Image (cartoon, rainbow, N blue to C red; front, top):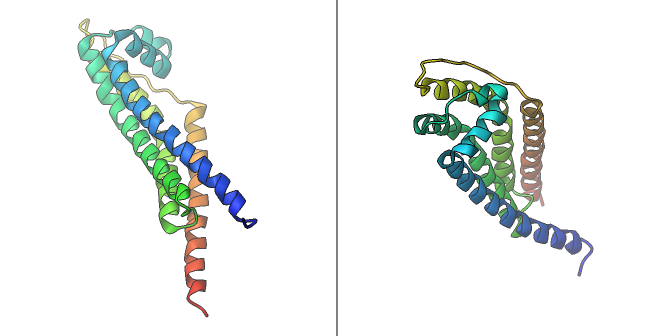
Length: 182
């Protein structure tokens, strides 16, 4: 066994494990979001998490739960898209294709989905407050927007991953170009 085979063997095992973990994560995110809007107490917890104490005052009627599901659909879809992309990256790595244009592309898509979560956080809180208060039978309307350090963190991490993926794309391009020289 060569010296290089050992690290790549570890990478292959790690990538296979992460592919399984990511698949489980995708299923849990989708199932959790569906359950969140079917179970009123879970919807209340989501409102509290996204809107703070303001969320405690909003009604959790069936119409409000539907409105909340619509407001949260886009960020959840972006999250699932990113998880599918990173699962594809792990699959590439598990098959020994870690340093390829496809792997770099999957990493870029994951990075973009992480970075896009930053503006989606405040936008979702605003949509959530308006959508749920529109379903309030008392007629009381509310508009709230929340910002979190997680939003800033998502932007920075997404940007860093995208930069690393772009460097990987360039390295793959240069390696391909150098391979043509004999």
